[in-house]
Length: 289
Image (cartoon, rainbow, N blue to C red; front, top):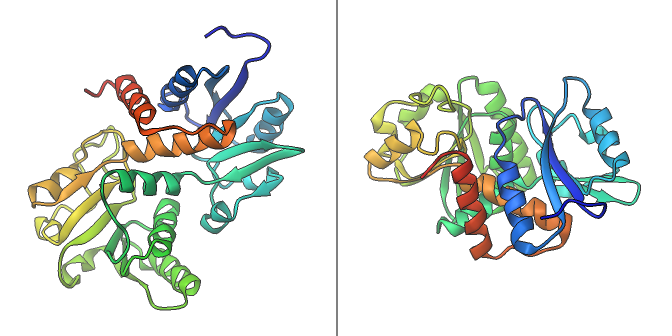
């Protein structure tokens, strides 16, 4: 592609951002769709999220992804925020509008699209969420909105998990979610849970760790989703598979959150064939076969 005066720019702001895989996704999409667009990473120093948002708008950027640690910090600098992003309390995509950026969260729609592609249905499922941080909160909201039968949030500190459970229950108007301490996992009744691993445990370079190592826990799991995408095969996934369950990692969530952002910026529709090309480019950038 020739870069010229008509080339539109998108990118990702974060700290750190040097190892992002997002350029592989977006530049593959732009190339295959024949759009005059480039996507680059922007390292934003601590405390400068507001300046970065204002600068991106002043420089006529078409759109910006936002990664850690700025998904909450950018919110006061937006002209508008999408209701889903507001309910989650985190923004990962800025879309240029007249007079400022509108904030969206494509992480959870990306996870849901990945689940649909993997043949996983949330409706009627009993869900276990490991962790009680911002990602776990977003997952709890997603699973509640998509019809989960029951949600258990397991976390080392009960207070944070209880806060999420109370918020979910207030949202749906019934006792859908409950909080338990992590060590209480043996008391989970029954089996065939959908377990979603929403912590950083097992992320590169600490790849041989899992939040729970006890194999009796994994015997209760029918499907396991690890939102960590590096490594592509986590310890959590291996434990799920060794106990007879199906396991998925965070790579497709990363792919589809990027695709949804691209669609918001450009108005293009990305079909499954092109999604697979972007997925292949992303795995090549990560040196995954």
